[in-house]
Image: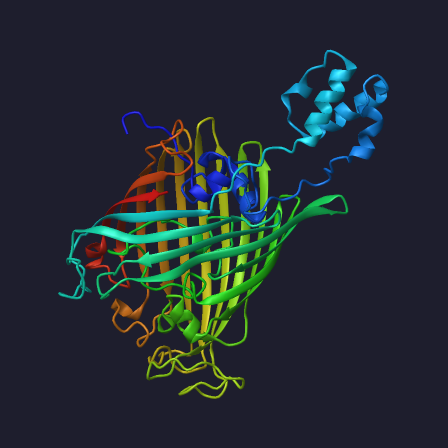
Length: 522
């Protein structure tokens, strides 16, 4: 760390593209315009030191001539100068042979060099399995001991804990020129009130992308299949990729109540959608989500009962974003919307899958709870000589209607409620490949009072208001790191400060949380 060299971002994509992390990222997960295009394009960009796919992709439009086709120009002394020139031109287009970069001494030598070049295929770069590992650990301190701590449940203390938070295995990158994958498998260590950790699938995004022109306008068309609403999004304002990017599983790192689009069905659904990116400016997307079966969720490491219930039919999601660049300035304004009709789990807590008629035990015939979310977001980025400035904001409003009569065994006091979420943040990244990154965030959640849903909260409201500050450092930030592009790391400090937590303004500071963390990727 005294003389820090550099690493790239996720080793999978570093090996595939050969790009420094600062080309794709303003922060560890924050994307630049180039990084957004890489993801929208299906994770298929190459250019690194290894072949990007397991099997070679045939070069488009390059066909080596047969011996008969070359016969007329291969006999020394009989070949015309035009034929020699044509052969050399062809050879220069199909090979990088150094001999063809300078004129040959004689026409005969030109023929010999060109013939040898076109008959010798280019050396094929090797392929490396597109895998990477991430370890996340750190130290967590809360202003007061965690009231959820239970002696003997796990190895954590009521406060001042140090240890691993998660371990992840990544796989992905280009499968072909048009198909790419981002997939994550994670072992989550136990939280304060959990007895044990477990393996489970994490964020997964499989894409097909194809670019072309329609009426002289550049259009990129894509299909995405994923398992977490908004994980497919490329702006760091939608819920799946907003701050904080990394944190431990302990302490209080955000509001206790959130909208459905904000992670309620992470890794519990299968989503399929299509998108258009028109003229590198207008992004349009439509996606549908269906709950995975109880058995499938359990086998994949997702707890079905931790969700609100099963989605009836298909939950629609739409996204629109307009991005405009002005030199070093980049501005996006957009919005998204979703509607989830959910049949809650039975009062007894037993997961009863929906049948073809929509019946569910203990639920009125065909009754579901409705959650309609509307989001508005914006992002501004400025790229300086050796720094980035990023401003982001997102607001989500959720309209709730409880036609099913209850949620997880609780009967809401109101037939309808509303819930609001607001996040606003600013980030400054300084140095080669964003070596030092400072972020400040304001967050607030507020909604309708409900004496039953929020019976443990002061004034029976879900209201939480707080601030998050983070300072992160990439030790390897100005030259090639040891084992590049196989290794990367990040060290960070986080502080969460609350002025209100679940309606409580008297003891809200007890939830203030300080975290020191480190990520290691290899």
